[in-house]
Length: 524
Image 1: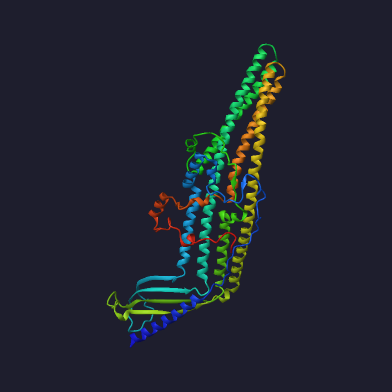
Image 2 (image 1 turned 60 degrees about the horizontal axis):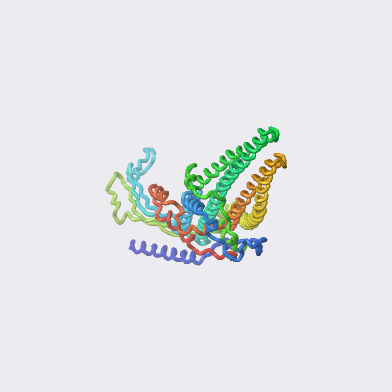
């Protein structure tokens, strides 16, 4: 009879649990539904009609290949595999994967534990127990406890959505770090080559000026001119030579920066920089696509969108606290107590116990605190919406600025080239005329000084063209698309982490939010 009553009670609990589970399936989240925030973008770039731009074509993913420089390609490849801040960004993806896993697990019974205890009980002699109760008792219990809060209002589903969006934001942050790293390596490499060219120009001009000094010394020794010409020539050539150590110091700093970008100590980059010491040349025409394409290409925009999506889901988590929560709980096990340390028949059927049933919790008197928490989450969501819109506007401005700088530098380089040709001819004519006594030495000094200035300006213009192209592609968000299936955590680091912790495949395999297809740019 007792067993029939037990089975009947368990059946009632099971039917009640099933009913509550079906209700939970039918329930819906109480939070808002996220849609991509509206952002204002121009229909076309301001310089869309410039002949150096191909606006209708898709922007080049491997944009640094346009420089046709194997050394630059090698540096970027090494940096993308060894850069330490990029590895930190990859580890944040792993952390976000684990956080998503935690949120997913909370959709299932929140308490699942096996517990056991053994206790010796000895009440004081001043405690009345009655004549039939022993003074010393021992109690044993072992059982399994479970508790499951039904996700009636979508609190746990919203938490999963929030962590999934946060995971996607961390992936976008990694891609943004990859874009920045690629651009910084290219920019620093251009700086290295620029300093090398400026040093070569200074040495070459020092040689030219030294020839003028020898002419002045010869004319002074022959009595054709005063010592002033010699001192002025000496001042100019030594001043030019003095710029070389300064440029060499800046060159070394740029090389050290390259080593750091590659995750290596200073000095490593020198061995990789062998080859032609020329400033990388940009192609005659570059592809920049259209403004709307930037929404898909720029990972910082995607990160801002996913951060807003995560916060939108957190509003649902906060709102769910306003409503009653429904839970199922249960315990099952064995328990026994008696005098002495044994003889309780602990494992007999009579030691079996259970308890199960539903529970309801409603923190009604915390209403004000909960409402204010919803307001906090909503305010944060609105902040992120505005932040997303500002990110889009800033991105559009960066593209326009980089485009203008790139095109203006190309135009300036054409004029600088003509100026250098004229300056070279001026030096040649002034030296010839000074040797013949037709002009004074000041004309030679001015021509030589102008030549060095014009050559330096031309080198800087070529450098500006190259760095302008780097800045343009960085602003367009190019580079992250090429990472493919490269591991976000290096294999050596994976081995180190797995030696400490059971990571399963989390270090190497993406989770389902990462593998889902993102919506097309411009859609909600």
